Length: 401
View (cartoon, rainbow, N blue to C red):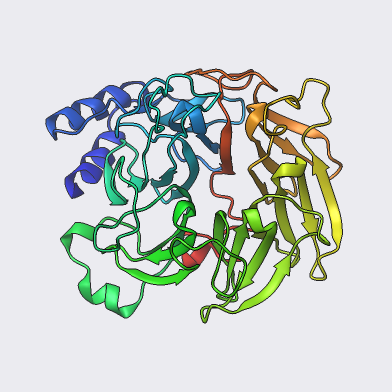
């Protein structure tokens, strides 16, 4: 695969952007790679991996997309809501740009999911992979086996991985073992929220588990126990911030598995779907069951909150609950980017709680391959701004503030 990057650099400087997509497809064909799962919209005014674009895990459309601020899709991995093969990312829950690569988690789709009627298997449509793909949709690294659930570390099995975080750098052990297979990959480990196994695991590129929090297969709230964990982020102090969803808390743990801090917004949160540490030291919680995004200070006091279910068109009659926001991240400009899952939209909200940007259409699922400014999303679970790691774990050490 090293030659692919060289070809791309050589041709990019000589060929107009309007022809680059077809040239890329031809290169993929010659190299024996499948282009069916990815689409590059390489046009003069559309740029892949452009700072200011947005990356969206469009969950039940089985895809990850990159869109411009006006909603125009410039990149897509996944073949849509009717495809349940490993050429797509089934039930995409999380996506992160790592240089030119994209890290994503295929959670799978449970049986009977209202928003995914094409998944007719009585046991659901599984994925159970964390994958790293290049801009052409070729998988360059994978943990987990497609369609297989488990926890065996020798087989590298996962059970409903819901989130993945690329950790910057590498240790001396990794550096000594690096070889031609990894020469083009970014350096680092991957932190995986392995929800069905009730654990957070850190794995190296050779798929060794080098750290774990949570006892595999054990549900609880005692020492080294979790209940349906939904995310994990590495903090600047070296601790791990975990959204312990069904324990209705976010916990900060050290590498010795001690709980250092617990955040519950004074005991008011229910279903913590995500947690991140802001630049001011506060913690931003996605309080899913309350359809709320809440910022708490170091004393767990609420300092800001936003509700996603106040619009008259909001999906508040869905069986099992309302819109259930799943991810909120604070952007560099101070806005908050919210994945409002069952309202089928991603919204950007300013500090005064005004919506300044929307992808998708409130309470209306759909599938669009050109533009999602006015609809065309299905339960988007995660969204991030390209190049903006405010409050998030940056994939490279030079991104640290």
